[in-house]
Amino acid sequence: MNAFYDTLDLKYDACPPDCWACEEACAKARDGGNVLEGGRIKSMHLPELSFNGALTCIQCGVPECQAVCPTGAIVKDRETGTVKIQESKCVGCALCTLACQYAGVYYDQVKKRAFKCDRCDGNPLCVDACPYDVLSYSRNGVLRNHLKYEDSFATGTGLCFGCPAELAVRITSRIIGPEAIIFGSPGCVSILTVGFGTQATTRHPSFMCLLNNTAASMTGVKRYFNKVGRDVKTVAFVGDGATVDIGFQALSGAAERGENIVYICYDNEAYMNTGIQRSGSTSLLAWTNTTPVGKLRRGKETPGKNVPLIMAFHGAPYVATATIGYMDDYAQKLEKALEVKDGLAYIHLLSPCPTGWRSDTDSGIELSKAAVETNYFPLWEADHGKFRMTHDVKKPRPIGDFTHLMGRYSHIEGEVMEELQRSVNERFALIQALCDM
Image (cartoon, rainbow, N blue to C red):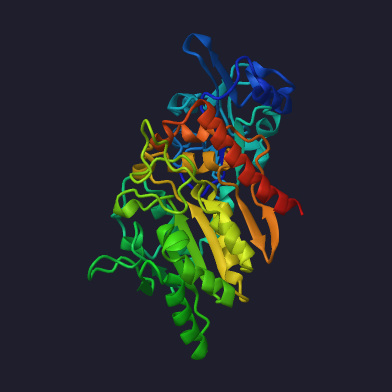
């Protein structure tokens, strides 16, 4: 499947028992309310298996149903990725229903034709009908408008299996353009941003900094090009250690002076590259090798620094938070950051670490979305002092829905979980109050 297509997301096995709201809304819009014949989305309630969920077409990148259709009735929209059946061309052979491995194509015995979900032409009614926030719709196709350039990094990676930072830096490369100078510092992603030994891994002009001087190095390079009359984009992609701890003095100074640089912190909430030691951004009660868990200890005893908020109060013209779970949101924010001319632009990008977070290697996007949906990591921006939520969570999930996805929080339960929930609520309330002003 193409990650840049629009997506209708269903939370697996998250429906309450005996709810048919999505299927009823679909059937009512299509065939006057006949759920059995008209619903393009199917509720599934299997009490013997304790399963309650929904099933719909996943809009395959290479649809097998399209390949077997003898009349060309099945087409895939190049912009949205939606696979549609042109019912006027359907001859009722039902081959598509047999070819679909995911049971996403259905057959109407009365009308003798196949039918399936077409996502209501971009406004899926099932999403609005769901009272439990199980369904969501993402217009990821918009992301492609921001991908102006080719990936400037070499194929392959030296990062851990499943590390979402690689996806983030490759998307960043395609937005900032090949002439932008990219700055790195010692950390997980430096092998991509500045190379390894004498081997280059990027076509970008690149600059390897120390942990403590990324913003200062960027300042010098940017001022030189300004002096010779060239407007060059200078973009840092560095970790939390080089941002919230060791390099914070240089970053703070650059923001205070109004240096015109773009600074992106990919935050995996610890010093992952050197052995999973706690950093200033490690969150409350999280396990690391230097904040162990045992009879006398329960992980980190203090909340992480709210660096994006600190940068906003530094007066930086543009500050934003982002995750790979909402990549279009990140792309739009990076575009805004690149347009800033009157000072520093800062983006704080949450980047789950499967190794240090003790999570599944394929859980990076799931973790990123759960962090937002539980208000652990709200998505917001501050544009010249005006705060705005860029993704409103109508029904926040409990923080346990986020912590249970990883081992670094496996010790959290009961009153300790309530303490973490209070901390999350307080941090979110502060940002929400700023947005409401």
